[in-house]
Amino acid sequence: MNCQLCQKNLDAYQEGRLSPDMMTQVESHLETCDSCKRIYNIQLLANRVINSEKETGVNTFLATRVLAGIENLENAGHEKESFTVRILQPALITVSLAAAVFFGIVLGNLSRPAGNTDKVPVELALINDVSLESVDILSLE
Image (cartoon, rainbow, N blue to C red; front, side):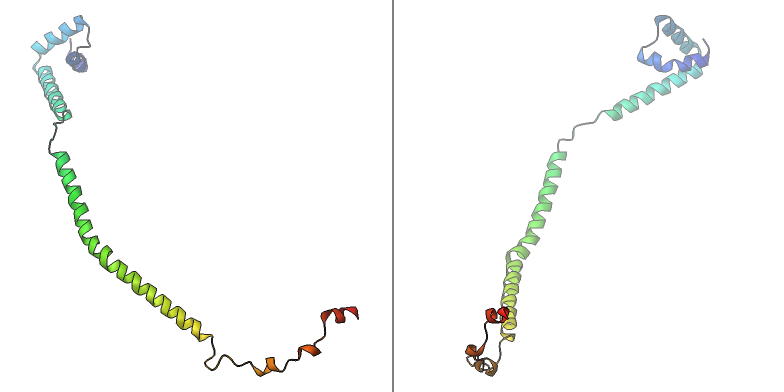
């Protein structure tokens, strides 16, 4: 067996997918060829590193740390918001409503005349309702 064929079949040899005859040929070549043996050992080490990286260890304190961080963020937010929400926001709403009522009253009084509102204007007092003609009379002509 030559080195090129041996190196081509190293992965299958490691996984045990070769025929028994080919397995014995690769084994005998690895015993005699130092360069192929070195490549095979490097592949074995690389596979070990990859397999060890795939395995994840359980971190028992991860969930506790994450939940504690979330709780700290929530508590910090509530402490800052509680003063604003509980005291300043109702006070601002009350002042805004009082200002709106005041300006509504002021604007409503602007349309009224400043003098006595019980007097009837002269133009209305001089109207003689008896002398007004009916619309029906005008339509007959």
